Length: 154
Length: 154
DNA sequence: AGATAATACTTAACATGTTAAATTTATCTG
DNA sequence: CAGATAAATTTAACATGTTAAGTATTATCT
Image 1 (cartoon, each protein chain N blue to C red):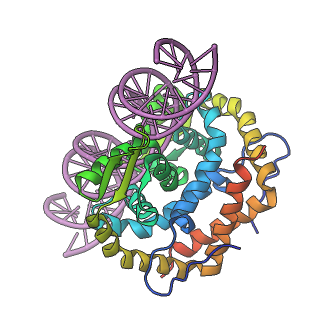
Image 2: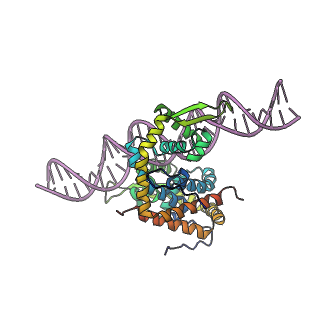
């Protein structure tokens, strides 16, 4: 079905048949469905991701938040500034460990999430209807396995 | 095996069990293996992607290149400036259509690709050995289906 | 042919990605 | 307990992502 280049020695794969590009293209294809909603409400993809994570986990330190939202620490610092200025998050210092920054959603932030949740869920359902729930589930499982395989093992 | 949240109404999925984040995490996990090599040779991930595509397709216009490398036009404009200044690519105007910019690898650019190819291929093989060739192949197939399902249909 | 729309880029402006260095606070060692 | 180390962020600098606006060139339409 798919042309498999014979890669006996140390040659490069066809770019389109490569994990980095394939994963990037897949993500772009999915995000194309969400971008209109985010743009309409003036939040970037990353800001929304941070708020989604905070909505799930409550109050957490910056490192944990960065890891969960797949955002690097320096980016998170800037994003926090933006979200705090907009009144969507509350930032404080950890009294137990003065190095840590603690963050949580503000009431306004929670309302914002609730306001967009239905439209966001509908978009995801639209995507599911095109791909199929089982297929998405399988893909997510495959990715989980990939992550386990690539991390923490020899 | 995996906890499936009951999502009868219009609620948000668990972030970690969502296509945008899962695909992003997978990509990051893979790129972590390549970044040291790229950093060692002072090329960014995107610059390398552009050169990889050019190596495959020869001389092409900017739009095609941008699409193949998953890079937006404005980013490509800047990347071209960088790569041209470094002598890795040659840029020219399409005589048949004055709007188009044509690009191809320079001899120096081709040599650069050849120099990094073995190490890059070894890294990919390392990744394959951890995940398994068939599993990767399956994943790539699943992604192709996802791309077809999401594009150009109703 | 001439006005108009469509293409293909390019610029501009702001947000984020990425790495390295700096800062502040904790922890560890002797 | 003082000095060295480590940990958690932040800052800085440059590259790219992203959208909107601007430019030049080509295609279209009457």
